[in-house]
Image (cartoon, rainbow, N blue to C red; front, side, top):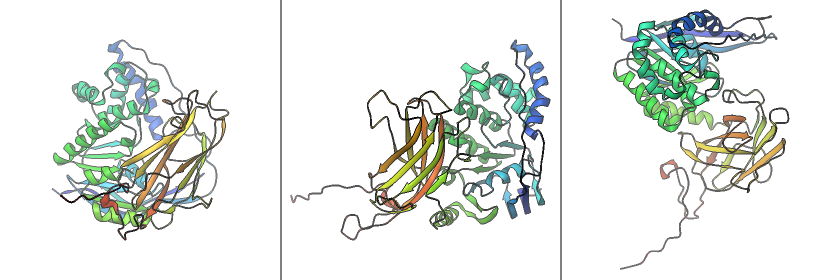
Length: 435
């Protein structure tokens, strides 16, 4: 028997933007429609009713073609854990959709040996009107599990997801974190030979992320194969011995993870990042968020737009927003700063800088002048958000802008700090006393 779990040869995926006119239903919507009735009957013994939900129709217009993947070839052996990294739009999610047979390739060959479990988006395979209990059966059925298998693992799935109190609540009332916990639990407990995971861990809390990492590690130790897409390089470094770097649908590198991360950092530092990001229809927007943030920019203290800064140089982050038709009142805005490796450096919000009651105009720009701490040379990401309450967000964009910090003799001694010195450059008064 071959030890190759996944073989991809000259894979290409071409999208014709606007080729479909009129209304159509996605594969997922068709599956949901087919399974909703049987799932209600399957779960009727629990004595709970379910409401009907209409499917959404979509239309496309235009005549543009785009190759989401082109000339992609690689092999993955049984038991390997492979990271798939790259910028937004690089083709990562499309690759996993082709491997999971959700999307048909335009050209090339794909062979996946064994049962495939995929978690490609938060709440994938969930019907919003069905309860968590019913969606465990629905999602399990879509992933290829039989009713007896789902029933046998039901308690284990629920315990892993930590949603016992909300089992009989429609999932449309779940938070995004609850969505991802339940969806991941179902996918991970179906005992797949190949597990495909796409960026969903960005939604869960730190404790659940550790649990998911442990579960994926166990899957690999059992001789199964895992492909994980993530922008969190700490997860990639911890979990994956090898990684695949995509850029504009093509493979840039496929090697040991440290080598690929070095290549990726070089790519990010090449000046291709934008200091002005239009965000109205950004793919970085979290699930169920409203399009309130319209633009995010980075400038230096002179007002010049840029993404390259020297150590200690102030960075002006500006969040342009319009919430006039989205909510009755807007309380504040904030940001989170992360390093390339996934370390959270810190953050700030308007609540920290003012006393209650917290209010900002319904349309405006929030300027954050970032002066401290002094960052060490690295590539950094900024996540921004706005909300009507300190604990409730109406819009959040993950890692929407990015920038590089370059070495400078900040101590005036000729010593240049590096990433090995940490995330920030410490400043201390030192006195040496002879004894």
